[in-house]
Image (cartoon, rainbow, N blue to C red; front, side):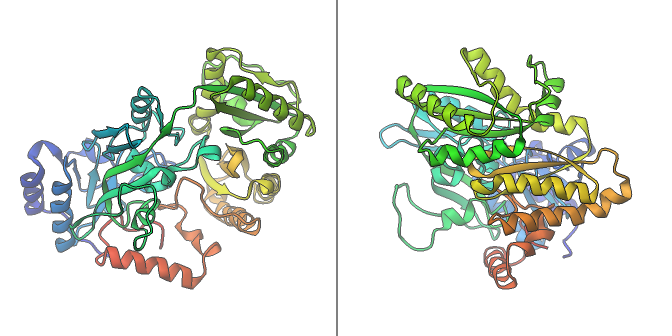
Length: 466
C-alpha cells in the first residue's frame, strides 16, 4: 500500500486545526513516538499530532482520508503487539490530551471518560466514591483507557470480574472518513441493531478512534486476602488451577509464576524473598468480598485443593506491606524479563484445564527449536504469557528457526481449544499467524468489516491482517 508523504501544506493544515504547539516534526519527538513496548521495533512517523477534541480528530481524519495519509492512533504506547507502531510513517495521532473524566454518575453507577485517562487514575478516583472498575493490566499505572479498549485488556482480576469489554456501555467514535458516531446507549441491556460497541473494543484502532467511553461500575469490595503458594512442579501448579474452580471457588485473581520469572524479578527489584531450590513455580491467589470470615473459609478450601497437587508451605500475606510485595513481584515480571535478555512475548490463551498441557508443550517445542522460555500469566482464565529468551541463540536461528517454533506454539494452542492472544492483541507482530485460527472465509469477513469502515485503509494500516 502506498501512502502520500506529508508535505508543507499538510503540516500547515494540521497547525490550523489543532494549533502549532501540538504539531511535532522534530527528530526527538518522532523517535519517541516510533515505538511502544514491543521488543525493540521502531518506525518513526512523519509528524506527531496531539488533538484535544473529537472535532479536531474528525477534521484530521477527514483530511487524511482525502489525501491518502496513513494515521496511527496511540496513547501511552505500552502495548506489546506493535499496535501503535506507525509502520507506514504518516501521522502518529496521540490521544493523550483527551484525558478528562467527564462525569461519574453515582446514581446509575456509570462514568463517562476520555481515552487518555490513565487506568490507575480512573480506578483510584472511582474508588474514592466506593465504586470499582476491575480491569487492571500490569501497566495500569501508565497505560491509558483508550489503549485498554483497543486491546480489550484484562489483567489479574479478569478471572472473577471480566475484561474491559464487560464494563463498556457506549462509545463516541470518530470514523476514518471523519464522521462522529455513538455506538450504543447508556443502558445495561441493549438489543437494538448490531453491537457496534463490542465491535470497536479489541479492534486495535483499525476501525475508528474512540474519543469518549461510558463505563459501568460496580460496588467496591471491602476485603481481600492474598496467598502465595509454591509448587515442586510447574505442571502440577497449572493442574491445580482448574481444580480450584471445580471446588466451587472463584478467586478474584489466580496467577501463575514460573521459577525463573520469580528469580529474575527478585534480582531486578528490591523485593526481599527467598525461593527454595525445589520450588519450580508459584500460584498467586487472591479472594475478595465484604465478609472476611467467608474469605478465610475460602482460603481454607483453597489450601485443601492445593495440597492435592504437592504444594509447599503456603504464605498468607498478614500485612498490607507483605501483600504489596507479592503483587509487586507479579507486576514487575515483564520489565524484569525485558531487562534480562532480548525476547519475544506470546500471549496464548487456552481453556484453563489445558494449561498444564500448554506449558509442557511449550517447553518441548523450545527444546526442539533451541530456545528457552520463561512463563507466567493469568492462570485463572488460561492466559499464559510465554517469554521466549534469545539467550545463546545465534542471530540466524533467532531470525529463522524461532518463527517456526512460534508457529508450533500457536498450533499447539489451537489444538487445545485456545487462540493466539488473550489480551495483548495481534497488532503488527502476530498477524502472520492468523491463518492458524481462522479459515480463509473468516479472514475475508473480517477484512470486509475493515473495508466498510475504512475504505481507503488509512487508519492504523498494516495491523491484524497482512
